[in-house]
Length: 581
Ligand SMILES: NC(=O)C1=CN([C@@H]2O[C@H](COP(=O)(O)OP(=O)(O)OC[C@H]3O[C@@H](n4cnc5c(N)ncnc54)[C@H](O)[C@@H]3O)[C@@H](O)[C@H]2O)C=CC1
Ligand SMILES: O=C(O)C(=O)COP(=O)(O)O
Image (cartoon, rainbow, N blue to C red; front, side):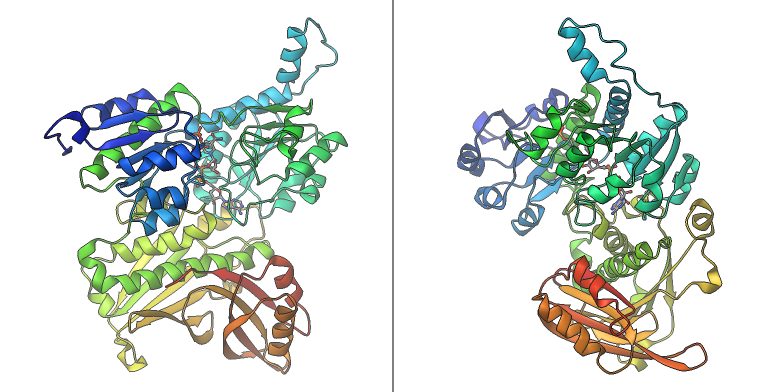
C-alpha cells in the first residue's frame, strides 16, 4: 500500500495524535512514515488547542470527539476508534467536516463475550465478595454459597456479534440459551442452539441469567426498567457489558435492595467514570454487584487486534485509499454519484421506512419481522451496469434504525457480507416494463416476505403465508427528489424525510380531527399531511380504510402513539424518523 513519504525533516511528516492507551502493535506500523504523538491525560481544552496540527486522531471510548473539536481540527482527515462503539464521536459533525471515522468492528468481540461470561461466573459464585472477605482475614464459607451455570437459562437481548459469541460459550457450559432480537439472523440462532423469543415479556420470566448486547440507541435506552425487572425471577442475575443506559440503574439498585433480583455483573455505566453519589456509584457499592471499569475489550489480544486494524486504516486513508470499516464513508463512487445519488437516497429511505414502520408493528403484535426482500428496478434504472450502490443503500437503510448512530459501516464493498451476517436476503430484479405511462422514468418497488427457515426457527406465533399481509413500499424520483408512491395497498405521494407519523384508520368522519387534536395537545406540530384511501372488504359489510401520513416537527413519543389507537381514532400508528433528503 502506498505510504506518504517524508521529503524533508521529521516535522514535515503527517502527525497522528493518540490521547489514550492504544496497543503499540498497531502504532509500530505508523512510526516509519508519520510523526506519532502519544499524549495521555490531556484535558478537553488542551486537546482543542493542539488538534489543528494533526491529520489523524486515534481514540478509544474515553476521548470525547465533539463537534467543536472536529471544527477546530483543520488538517484532520480521520478519526480512528480502536474498538466498536463510536458513541463518543460526533459522527455527523465529522461527516460535515469531511473527516472519515473508522472503527474496528470485530477485533474485541471475543474479549467482550469472555468478559460477560467472567462476570456471570463471578456473580454466580460471589467471587468479588469472597475475595474482599478473605483479603480482610475472614473465612466465610457458609455465607458465600453460590449457584451453578449448568442447566440454567441464559437470556440474551441482542443476538449480534457479541451476543452470539456469548451464546456459543454458554452452550459449552451446558446452559439453555434463549434470546430476544427482532432482527436476529434466525439461521445462525438455530445453528447456535438459541431459541428466539418474540418479545421481552416472553423472555424475561425464564431467565436465570440475563445479559444485554445491543447498541445504545433510542429503542434500547432504558429497555430494562422496574417493570421488566419485576417480570424476572428473584433468583435472576443481570449482566451488562454493552453500554450503560440500557438498564435503568436506579430500578436495578431498588430491585437488588428489595431482594427482587439476586445479583448483577456490570462493566458499563451511564457516566464513566461514575460521579460520586450517582446511581452508578451506588450500584457499584452494593454487595450483590460485581463491577469492572469498562474492561470488556481490555485484553492483550483484543487491543492488539483493534490497534492493528485501525492503524492500517489510518495508513490507507492518509495515502488516499478507501478504509475497510468506515463508519461515515460514502456508499457510492464519485463517477456514479451524479446519476445514482437520488436513487441511492430513495432506496436508503425505503429501507429505513420499512424497518421503522413495519417492525414496530410486528414487535407490537409479537409477530416475527421479515427478512427476505424483493427489490425491483423499473425503467432507466433497469439498464444500469451495476446496482451495487442501490443494494448497499437498501441494507444500510434497513439496518440503520436498529444500530447506534455511526455504528453501521455499510458500503459497496461490504454490503453483501453484512446482509449475510444479519440474515437479510435480497433478490434484485429488473423489469423491462416502462413506467413512463405512470409519469416517471424509473420506479423502485420493495416487497418483504418471511423465509421458511425463519418461521421454523422462531418460537413465536407461526406465520401462515396466506394470512400474511402485503408489505410493499414503492418510490420514484422526480427532479432529483425521492417520493414514496405506495405503502402496502395504499397509493400515496410524499417525500420521505423528517419525522413522520403513519396511521391506518377507518375512512370515516372525525379521524383526522381526532389525530390532529391529540397531537396538538401533546405540542406536536403538523407540517404536512397526505391521506391515502382504500376500499376494503370487511366482514359482511364494506369498510373503507385509509392511511394518514403526517409530517411532524418532532417524533411523537410512545405514549402519544399508543393514545391514538382508539375505536374513535386509528387502528395502527407508527413513528418514523428519516432525516433530510
Ligand atoms: N464493554 C466493552 O468493552 C465492549 C462493549 N461493546 C458493546 O457491545 C454492544 C454489542 O456489540 P456487537 O455485538 O458488536 O453489535 P452488533 O451490531 O453485532 O449486535 C447488536 C445486536 O443488537 C440487536 N438489536 C438492535 N436493537 C435491538 C432491540 N431493540 N432489541 C433487541 N435487539 C436489538 C441487533 O439486531 C444486533 O443483532 C455494542 O453496544 C458495543 O458498543 C462491544 C465491545 C466491547
Ligand atoms: O469497543 C467498544 O465498544 C468498547 O466498549 C471498548 O471500549 P474501550 O476501547 O475499552 O474504551
